[in-house]
Amino acid sequence: MKHLLIITALLIAFNHTIAQETHSKTDSLQKVLSLIDKNDFASQQKILHQLYDIYLVNDLPSALSVANRQYLLAEKTGEFTERGEAEASMGFVYYNQGKNDSSLFFFNKSLESLKVQPDKKKEADIMNNIANIFRVTAQYDTAMTIYTNLLKYYESVNDIVKQGKLLGNIGSLYYTAGNQDKAIEYTLQSLAIQRKSNDKRGTAISLVNLSVFALNKGDYKEGITYGDEAANLLKDIDKNYYAAALLRAGYCYYQTGNKETALEYTHTAINIYKENNNVRGMMEAYRQEGDYLIESGRYADALKLGKDALQVADTTNRLDMRLLYDMLKRSAIWLNIPEEALFYSQEQIRMKEADLTQEWADKIAEVDAKYNTEKKELEIATLKAQKKTNNILLLSLLALLAGGAGTGYFIYKNQKQRQLLSAQRIKELEQEKKITATQSLLEGETSERARLSRDLHDGLGGMLSVAKLKIATMKGNLTIPEENVASLNSAIELLDTSIKELRRVAHNLMPESLMKYGLNAALADFCRSTDKVGYHFFGNDRRPDEKTEIAAYRIVNELVNNSLRHSEAQNINVQLILDDTRVHVIVEDDGKGFDATIAEADGGNGLKNIRSRVTALGGKLELITAPGKGTEVNVEFNS
Image 1: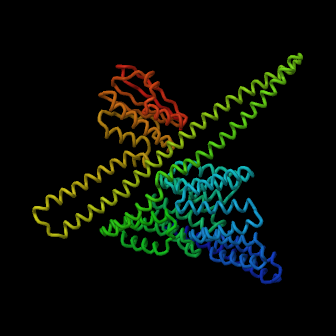
Image 2: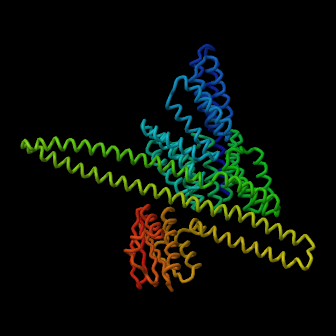
Image 3: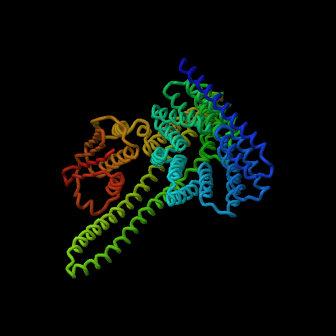
């Protein structure tokens, strides 16, 4: 309790100090503005720009009011650039408030105004914000196309700060689309650039996102570390993102048992969002408080809170709406209100099916792979051009050698060596292109497996559970003829069996134990549930990176299933060895074995898929088998 009082006092003192400083600055600027000659439009705009920047941090409604004044002033003077900037400012405020339609309207108006005096840099910044809107409204392929085009532009002008921001946005896109592996990869790239370029705001935003990824993995201590560091950076930079950092850290505190701090953080964030009319922020904060209420058994309060949130929700923000429907569904199930539970479940599934289809995942992966492949192709083309130049130079040098120039011989040798290195590098890049394509396919498969697993477990599983609950309620409330009781009980048992089977299928698609507890626990669980399979673990029970865990699990799964189908083995042994830098899996059986040379030449899909997974992660695979001698497969990754 003492810890909570200290935190509360610090938050109150901080907010009071910031409010005083902000009020003093804005009062001074407003006074200066009132003293400027009414025909001195340039000076007025300069002061308005300063006021907007200050209000943007702590007071979004006032920022919007100032942007509107900028717009009216630009209209009066006929300055298209100033008008475009004012429209972009209004769009940015609306975006931060979660009002996507209004935001998109003003950003598009801004682009039209800026056409009179084109400014590539300003247009790029506006397009980045438009892509953010497409991201949160589930238009993922359009957002990804804009992001990758902007990334090329910022690379061409060597704008490191904007590159970092774009990589972070791409990470957020992957997260929204359900691919957390890619989200983490891009966000870490973004964070590295932002730290290097001393971009404090960008660094903090990346830390906020990493806090979300950590809590999704169940690593709440890491989530607290990221969230608190972000909050410390943001408290005097951006009030709305400061609230977001408090929410993420608060959730992690709640999961570690520190519920008082979590609730204090959440209520502080809600107050900040209300002051700034930030709909997106309020939605997230209400959902988080709703989760706390459900966990503490206050289901009616959670349902009421969710319904209140629906009244202020921006329905274009698809992810927010799906998560809100999920909270309402869970509340209704606990309260035994089948009709409402079924309605909210159906709404959640409808939005999921519309937003997270494999088509979207494929399009995102395609745009990303295209961008990375284009970079490789550009480098290959450069090297080939260089090789051609070297050939011409070599011919010239040969002519010099014919004249007996000794120095030319050494230059010739040097050029020949450079030519060989260039050819080798081209081969390496071609191989990297193949690996990039394979990685994209595997990541798409992983994303789709995770999505199907979630949809089966949360969507269809939830609906079946509601149906069972409704039938059980009817059974208790109705007088049923004796001859129909057996049929009703049979229907309930059939529902139970269906729910269990559905959970088994969802588990096989993407085991929950793998995501929550790691490779060792998942393999142990898999082997225990499979006949003839023994499991042994050696080493340090740590968590390798998620990509390696998923690849290793899938490889073992496929090898065991192949052995069960084809080897006629009586015993299958799975071993996992983990040390500080290495992941080593061994699958061996006492079956009939096969001719490895023939199998490699025939290129069966099973072995081919396994080799693709191993190659994509830079691993090693060793196959030991012969007819009548059983089979052993060793796979090793550095992770």
